[in-house]
Length: 216
Image (cartoon, rainbow, N blue to C red):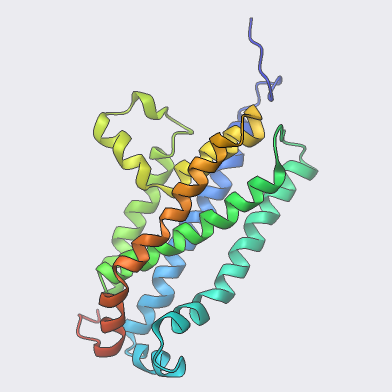
């Protein structure tokens, strides 16, 4: 006999929708962030954008992404409110930690977008690689196919998928009510994605100044 802790109805929507909606949001964050920065490079307005920020790369990035970030976070929290409050999807653990997970997911996807456009400072290339990376996230996150059954190489690659870490937080908080240690580790992993953007900051800064990459 089956003893389902948080889903006695065996509703597949509880497993699928609660992850696929953040997954769609993550893909949108990735693609629009790449486009927002890459469009400045394509139109050769990046130097003017940087000068508006007083030549400060960090200020320029914050000024560019802050309005988008607020919108993404509001959308993500809104999705959770609809699912967990109005549609009564189960939350066995902390709903506040789920909200924090959405915030970290948005930041992690923005960081990966900066990493891609920094490594490939051409809009078409970064968009193409970003689309491939974003779509692979749905398959490698583990909510449609268990990670433990994947080939070892793919199992290793799942660590580079922010949605995978969000999914682990969701399972622990919403479905299992597991110990907080099971949530802290994937949250730290999501935070670690910020480091990727730092690795390409100098290259992207130079690209904003010199526009020395193909425009088409």
